[in-house]
Image 1 (tube, rainbow, N blue to C red):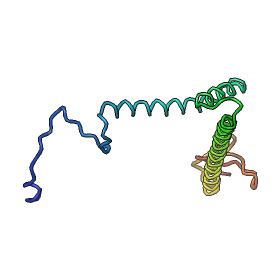
Image 2: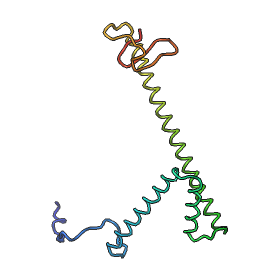
Image 3: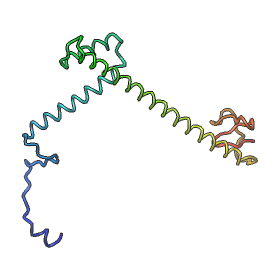
Image 4: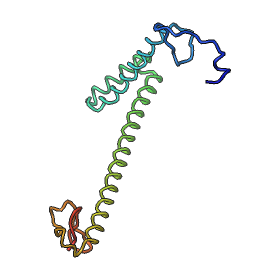
Length: 160
């Protein structure tokens, strides 16, 4: 510790003092905690609603959407109500499209990984040709059949 730092007064810390890393909002800490809990509950409710939306029938989904827009204060048949319903539908479609794209990306990554592993096994099996300490690759070798050469390849075996 430097000499200047040792000259600064030290404030005692009591067990009842809790430092709040968030900026002072002017609200008592209990209200801030309560609002934080409500925010977490609202986020959880939104995630559950989105997650469970696939488990509802189309009619149940429509009723939920109608209730949601009515809950926002829009009167059925008004332009605001129609816009609310359209926004909910567009958000749902956007989420479905994002899920579909993510699924496609995951499958493509798995395919690339599987192909890279097959290429590795294929090259290792080719390098081991003639090594009598390893068995000849077959259908149970955990690899596959090389379409170019007609020989099996695998992790711990030789091609021929």
